Length: 267
Image 1: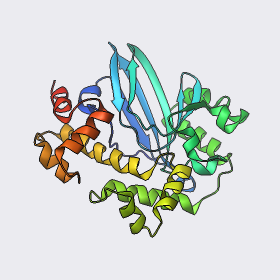
Image 2: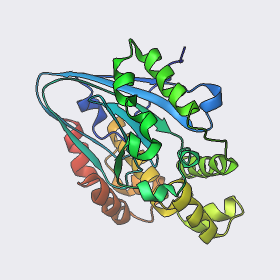
Image 3: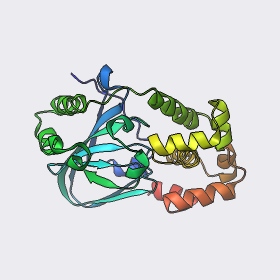
Image 4: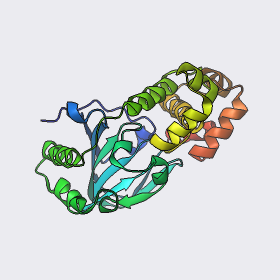
């Protein structure tokens, strides 16, 4: 039986306001699939009125079951926005590790960036009923079992480069001092060009993009927690040279300034 995983919704915009009417669950993968899968996640909703959900996506691929179909969503470099209509619905998805999707396909993950494909386009006819079967499962544990049986049938083999890419991504996420590609390359004894090629192949986005995205995840989380209104201090805490650079990046990806975002979370 799949074990549930604590939920940390990093990257969800205005998470404290948008949780009403939604139920979230996450489950760890079995040990043999852990080299590829970060977790399985489900969202069920029952809404009395429409609402908008927005996220700053992580640099990963998702295999999503919804409306009796399965789709593969590549790493998204832009803000994700969705309008939910009143009513009920459910999504059940595989979130691959950073780089963990690469062993399942013959070409670079960069070909999937900011794009969606039907599961049969990626995995062939054996994926034709995948979405329907997952959503028809009697419970979440049964849905995970269907996904895991499918993944095992894909014949993907462990790739040591996935662990390297995941380690690099984790270092970028955890170390606020990392602001440039050269710092990452030096930390892992790689040439910058080698690092960029590796990320195009396994991640689908460059390391510079990843650095910026994780810093903005932190900025959003800190604002959501409250008590952050000195943008100069926040910028310095996140490794920015000044608040102007933080505000520029924040507005480009989130769609508003940090101050505007902070006001919107307190409504």
